[in-house]
Image (cartoon, rainbow, N blue to C red; front, side):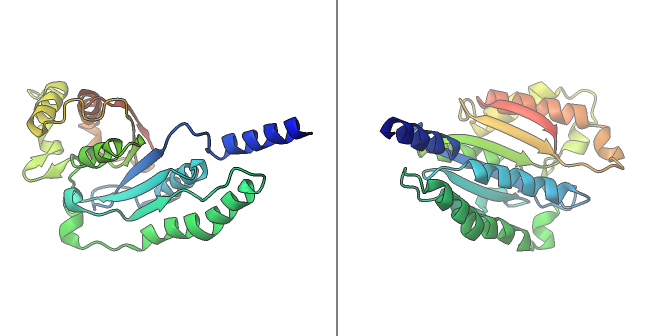
Length: 235
């Protein structure tokens, strides 16, 4: 009976993420700018589903941080910083996790949708600072997973990807290498997984379509040069 009980406790610990394999930090960036489709159609429900899925995986030493992408991404503090549930490694941990989800995690996720940014912040899109915020948590000893929900159209301080990649002479991969070198980002995301999810709409976007493949190629090269393993997909 004791062996069966021990196996059950181990199984529960595995299911709720308390495996002793290290702390995981999920860092999520959400594009709040006017140009993105983040809050149109069914995209909000897809973002909420993403966040709920990450929360459900969290163990007691894990961390979730959610940031807004806008003009001042570099200096923005988290919309949410959520630590995992307190668990004791016994048969009641499943109930503790459920109570934490209901009373702490889900209300905290709901709060991030109440933020209203001024027009000067949402008129431009600065994506590059996501790299420093992701790398900071790796330095803190976390296994880091990065998620970027954005149209990925960098448009800040004169660099507008619509204009940059409309020029047939600009190679997206070379431009990515140049930017990584300019910021000193070489290898700073080594061993980190980054998932880019691009929100869209059934109607599509003619302006974005004209440069989309170049934008995707740029970010694939950019995050790869930073050392990350990157996946770019639709939200």
